Image 1 (cartoon, rainbow, N blue to C red):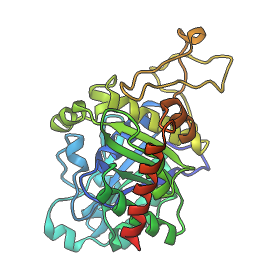
Image 2: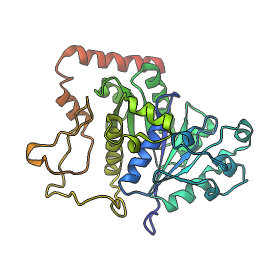
Image 3: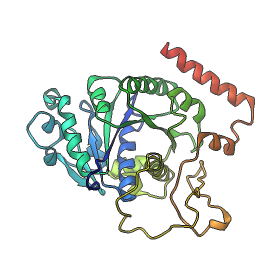
Image 4: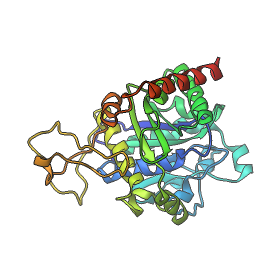
Length: 322
């Protein structure tokens, strides 16, 4: 439960295109935050294509649609799974027609009073339901792949976020080829997220296995590259807004060091951490480094061809939106 007198943060997780890993990101970010000691609630506000329940292996009797149609309370539709509270949606078309998105603020208000973080798994594209989800959020996290169509649609979603006067708190690039950056600077520039949290989640077969088993990958295979990326996303998001858990996780150990500003460097190809030699035995929080530092370390600014390709990508996106 959030600290007395302080409401929790609400973030909408959105994408311009379906099938880019938005719900997977919502589920794993939520569980990773819970593992870090936060009280977390996840709400499937994709009223037309709800699928968050399946990622947790839930069989739901009461859903958000029942709440939005006035047939149930938010507590009736809340389920505990993998350390988080999940409010799933319904896949029934009749319930979709009866759900009133205007009532979403009531659900969110109830959940933010009892949780440190509320993540809204919004639908893809641009619609009234999606706009309602973003309007009740404190900020928006954009999810996209590095493909041009996905990037273009995500940029349109970013424009909607701007019109609603909501900040884009970060961008998540999923299924990157080998854990590398896939021209992150150009993509982030096109999305307008160069100053926000930026995390690349590598293509990882462990994610497919986790989906089939109905378990978040951060729980099923916590050492996999994708799971490590979602852990970095959770740490980076919390750090970027100055959010700290009310108390450390019950199974955590005291891993504090004298240097509170130390970074843990992560190999983009494997997701493995690379601590400094004199800190090899120390553990600490994982922070996402700035895009400029990542690019310099990766050496992607070393040749003019890469820089030219980045400019061309940005120009193509701008032309698609003009």
